[in-house]
Amino acid sequence: MDPVLVARAQFGISLGFHYLFPQTTLGLCLIVLLAEWRHFLGGEESWQRISDFTTRILAVVFAFGIATGLVLPFTFGMHWGGFSMMASSVVGPQLALESMLAFALESAFLAILAFGRKRVSKGFYLASAFLVFLGSHLSAFFIVSVNSWMETPAGYAIQDGKVILTDWLAATFNPSFGVRFLHTVSAAWISGSFFFMALCAGLLLSRAKADAPDGAARGATAKGMAMAATIALSMAILQPFLGHAQIMDVLRHQPVKDAAYEGIFRSQEGAPLIGFGIPDAENGRILLPLSIPKGLSLLESGNPNSRVRGLEEFPKEDWPPVNVIFTTFHLMVSLAGVCVAAAFFAFLFSRKGAKKPLASRRLFLTILIPAAAAPYLANEFGWIGAEIGRQPWAVYGLVKTTAGVTPGQGGGYATFTLVAFVLVYVLLAVLAARFILASARKGM
Image (cartoon, rainbow, N blue to C red; front, side, top):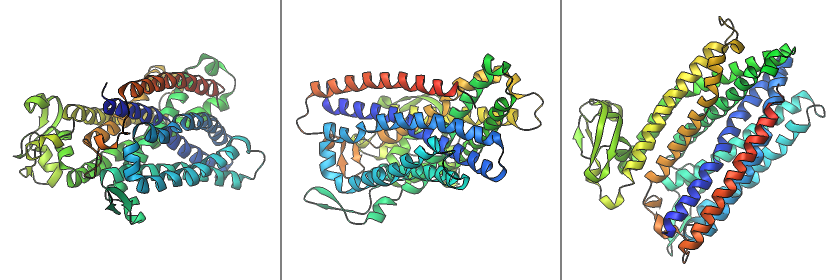
């Protein structure tokens, strides 16, 4: 097999599986912080129950996030030695800061959340919740910064064929970083909130919990659902605006990716906004398109008759895999709509004054559990589109992907590591599910 293709598949699978855990962590950290803040202000037992339950789940998710994330730096040496040699002066410091600062902060104070409830003051416990929240989001800050630099490199110079860091601030706060960070974090909050709502739905559907005399536990579960639904709905409504801002950023810096996202093969005035279609890059068309006439021109410029550049204006060797990123982009947008709808009904049914108790809405709770997959799939499709859409570049405009692979790497070795990693990840997925469910069954 082609070692470049296998190396990309191995890194993509590793990163895609690992990313399930950080996005959950970001959302759960927010829920812990808000619940602990409410408990600190009012002393209500229900908020402490929510905080303790979420912390218990967070500890498991965080542990598996570490297990799946530790391998990623080693893959740079295994498969991406060329990239590491050329771009290590930029990428290395950011990954080091993420490990030494963000990871250390998060892990140290998560231990206090897990074991220190009765050993520290309420104020210190709340501060620990904030520092876990801060540490997890600092981690996201550095990782998204590195990824954004690969999309819009800045603060560098080329010396002896290598990328040299010349301005850390410019490289860190590169042109695409700001909106990408906000888009990523808010999307992670949606995922974590949906994950929490699915756990609450499972608890409310459980016959043992429903028949138990502990009404306080059921009340805390419903209250936690309401808080998570509020987070999910507000962020889901915000997502289209952040997504539009990021697409406008792509249009400025990577117009060929934007044309592929939107399925525009030929430049035209009054370009339609395609909501659905089957891409056929070989023949330069979208089959069975459902579109809004002049919608894309209106969104990109405010003028429904403005000209939109098509893929024909760019060398074909610079095109990303159009069929893949058009599809993943539109799946992401569709799933975002599912998130808005599910979050709206969760918010409606869990609010105070609802006509029926949340626990009695068994059909909705049953649907909500698989619906929790929607934001995770949307996040994964979004990242697939962003990363594949950067091809054929590892660092846009600077380092080709083919030049980033470890020299002399044979296809057999790459294939072996790919298979080995997949088998390990299957095992980790089973273990993660078992540990999370075991922790959740203890209830609130």
